[in-house]
Amino acid sequence: MNVSTPDRCLLCHKTKQIRPAGFRQGYKQVGRDPLSLSWWECGACSGWFVSPVPTPEEIEGHCNRANYNDPSQARAIAQGKDLLQRRVLSQLASWVRPGPLLDVGCSFGEFLLAARAEGWAPSGFEPYGPAAREAAQKGFDVRCEWVLEKAGFPDKYFSAVTAIDSFCFAWDPYRTLQLFHSLLQPGGVLAMRVTNKHAILNLARFLSLSGERRDARLTAILKGQFHSIGANSLGEILRGIGFDQLEIEPFATTAQWNTLSLGTRTAYSVAQGLYKGTFGRVNLSPGVLIFAQKES
Image (cartoon, rainbow, N blue to C red):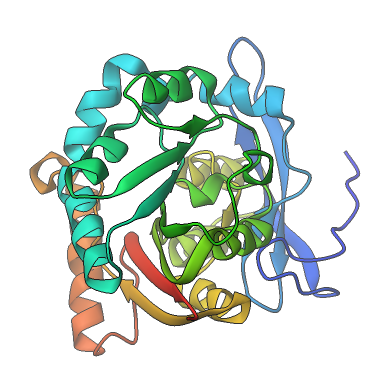
């Protein structure tokens, strides 16, 4: 399949430095063969991204098979993230007074409940219809659209925007970060939990020959996300958009420590030792929290 080279990076919006990333992602579907997605690499920010992005119908076909969209799993997943959610809310309260909060990718609304209990006035955005409807039944304003700009939230309204494990599924990540910025009040704070897989992806690509084996290996690491970039590079993009205070925290796990696999615990432990040993200069933690404050 011939796919034209994108004219700009979807992560940093730079032009003329785009090249193939050297693999294709198998994007699983319900009831049919996986899609083969083209990945590209940016020479400016070193980020990787999918282009073209699947259609909404194809994304829904993938979402329908994901356990995080299974209502029977919603409470268990939320309980696993309880410590992370409390950490996010505690940190947010140290940056800005609780007020209107938008949770992007709110799923079934468990984080909205936690935020409300801590004095926030939360709303939600969720592209997956069944999850959005259940979150709305919990008493929240939850907008269901495939892209955030169609949700109709007012600019400069929210004290905080949260995106916990949802930013990696944004179709146009640079535009999404701009929207986060525009939705925040002056001095408002963006909080994201993101997977920090870029170094591992680069290593896996380097250690495998081009072809089906590499495609399968990187697909397994990506788990359905549409882009990948190092945490520090993402921080620079946020600063360029207009966030003037930034903090990147390692060791952001999404499940209780004793429920993680041995491999995952080892990866976090080694990354934490490296982070401390380099006085924070090297952050390879598999999951990180990013707090970014909009200029006042």
